[in-house]
Image (cartoon, rainbow, N blue to C red; front, side, top):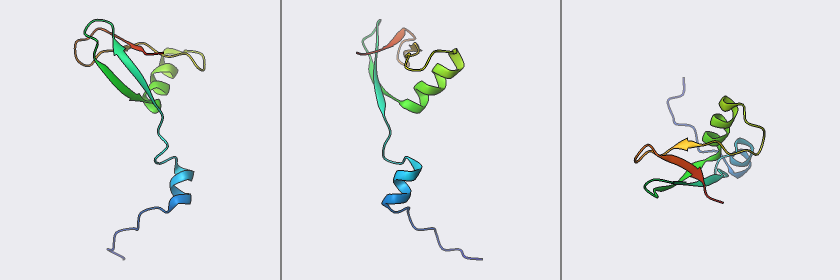
Length: 73
């Protein structure tokens, strides 16, 4: 058994795995104006669970105050 750590993936492996290519969307709260960048994987998960059509942005809840957290266009 080899107890040595695996080397980090090279650039080709990183691209194939989608590492370093994360897309984020900016969201802002309508109540407190808190802004945050939300990763596309989170948006896609919420959109799928809400049954939204492809390309539609889900409404999220502001982590700071619980207000409506909407995508900034």
